[in-house]
Length: 350
Image 1 (cartoon, helix red, strand yellow):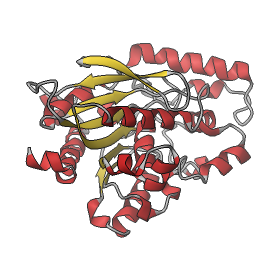
Image 2 (cartoon, rainbow, N blue to C red):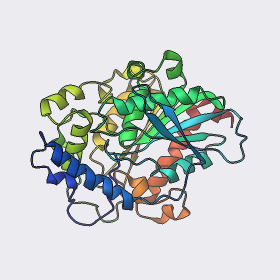
Image 3 (cartoon, rainbow, N blue to C red):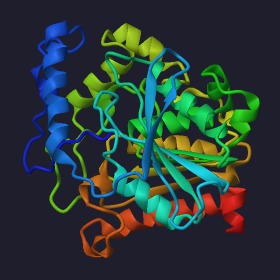
């Protein structure tokens, strides 16, 4: 759920504290909060890398078109078949951040041989709540598998809210319920999920939220109680009873899916200073202890928090290693690449 808040010292003051009634906010309050939150995105995350080309694909849920930023591998003919890695950006479910993870997308494309990376957009809540964003993810997978340059092998990955979407679709029962066919699901060879939301049913007060803002020397985007409260409310409904009912749906809380339904190998990154770390670690533990557990992997990133890879800067830079939290930041991606090479047949041969 990358928050797009620039690092600041001191208490975390977010637009969500403007809600006078967070469990039943007025339309005017929601609109005011969204404007502040979305306006912050304009100045907070400069990205150097741009896609090689941008296209659109139709959504399965409406007549809208979904933006796709395509990062092609260097020196590979356009017609050559190759695997595809999807990245769905963090957004708190509400912030339009298409293109804001360009540096990471280019890093993946440059590191994994002969692989195209697709930066997939999706509609945002509360205008488009669950399940519409997930339906956009499904739409992009369907479109990609139909392209002549796709070799039929897909990796689904993402950050925060985007990591949530990738984990949801790693479960076969979820993926089929959201519109993928058996054959399309079989094309998903791996999932890489960075600091995901896994269980919205967890009482928010029990999470170790970042109420004091950025901790000194810790690359992170602080996640406050109010942020989570608003993000989850926008996605599935602000009313507590409505939210708790929705949270039991495994398409909303992937931790509620049967462990055996995760036929796709999953790599999960949990961060020491992230309020979502405990639930990510718990799901990872259950995956590794369940059927076929050896195909799953969890990485616990020390000395970093939520959104570390955007707070610390371009992951392609050699300077990352010398920065606070740099070792964990680099290692999280190195291990992700190793995991994908083991899990995706065409990457094993490269």
